[in-house]
Length: 229
View 1 (cartoon, rainbow, N blue to C red):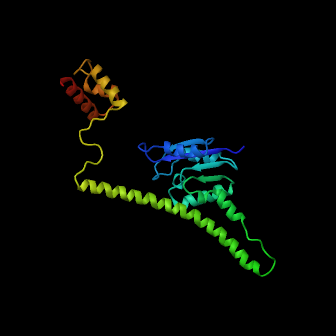
View 2: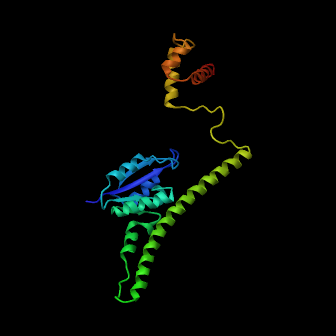
């Protein structure tokens, strides 16, 4: 029995992948969801590559939009054609006009020939319909690539404007980030360092905590400030 797959991808941890999952599940509740965090600047997509290796004829891959399949128009169009020829169904929720079902119907819908000279015209019409369907697919990927490019440009310009206006970009200087690693390292420093409750030298504690010299003294300074309070 054919399997439904829903492929969801985000570029950074800051993005929320659940919107894509929700959109797919709303229309295809039985879809097996595959999630991937991947940056469009690199080609490594292990989850997607694994899906392509294991997918079978008549299976379906559902995307929230064409940009989730590929950000590169040329590669996206080529992959579309490759999967189409393998009889893999592709569904794009935001661009349903290029679903493989529509494309397949366009290629199969031929004007019947008459057996006379008019057939020369009819054959031309049939070829035109095929080219038109292919152009629609390429146009969708082209548009997706342009939107991503425009977004990057707007982001870059926004950061430049903020910088020129004196606004803080990124993490403000002096901000203390609390992570599991920093908490564990500080616990080791408190327990082992001669400055606090231990008997070890700074060099020994650095090795025990597995942190660099600069980080060690930063954490140590923060601990002293907290104690002195």
